[in-house]
Image 1: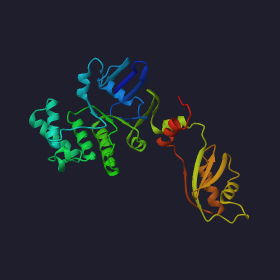
Image 2 (image 1 turned 90 degrees about the vertical axis):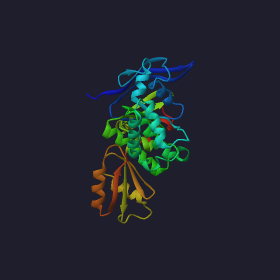
Image 3 (image 1 turned 60 degrees about the horizontal axis):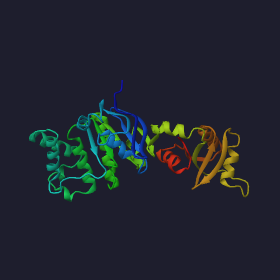
Image 4 (image 1 turned 30 degrees about the vertical axis):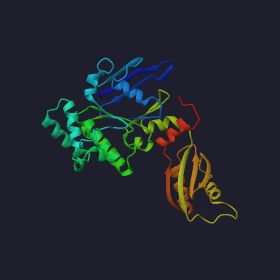
Amino acid sequence: MTENVIELTDLTKRYGSFTAVDHLNLIIRKGEIFGLLGPNGAGKTTTILMLLGLTDPTSGNVRVCGIDSTSNPIEVKRRVGYLPENVGFYDDLTGLQNLVFTGSLNNLSGMEALERAEELLEKVGMSENADKKTIKYSRGMLQRLGLADVLIKNPEVIILDEPTLGIDPSGVREFMDLIVTLSREHGITVLFCSHHLHQVQQVCDRVGIFVQGSLIAQGNIETLSANLFAGSPYIIELGITNPLPRPHRQSNAEWLNELLGNIEGIISVNLKNNRFMVECTRDVASEIARTVVESGAGLNFLNRKEYGLDDIYYRYFEGGENHE
């Protein structure tokens, strides 16, 4: 049976009349990368604070690695590594010295801390900058050092709060690959809090959509898409070369609509940016392909639109609809 590493039950946090987190229920399993997605002010940081035992919930329960974060926060901190949005180090120390200092704070001997620090600097690709003072580090270098700093105590869980903010695209890709490696090869559970849709979709096994203190949806991308867009029409996108001669004044879209007229379930055919968009009530991709090819026209490409996290996010936060 898969071990539940993070368990939140009816977790609620109020500040006076304001509810920051409202009856949050969430389970994250061992080795899973879970993305917590939501706009600023949604309650993500407050949830992190309760997970770490840095603030007490108004009601509900929070357990990390089987430990109650409220009654035993020190033990939770021993098992959890936290990389905040803005990580800070001692500017007058080198990257290696900062890591060794963190190791000593986590009860490692001097030699153990040094060996562990050097190992982690190599893992995060920072060995060449180990002896450089951190005041000279770029934002990306600081985040990599921050990840090494989080890992020095061998945590079972890593919490990342907007970890790629300010990093260039190539640095982001390398950082995200490193997160996946840590999860897959070392079984580390990762809670990844962000509003960068592509990054969340790229690395997370499941996501939770958080708004106004409530988790309004959770699951993998396929499940969220299927639930949210259930009943929506299929969109088949295709490119056609060398369409057959058509009657005078008939457009390409009208020609294709007439060609596909005998296929049941097609709602409309439109041409956008030299691509045909066929809206239909069922998946008729194979029938469309066969019909086009048999007509003598050239079929350049055909694919069915898949709804990604950006579509899901738009539907929840920008579409003006209530999906709770």
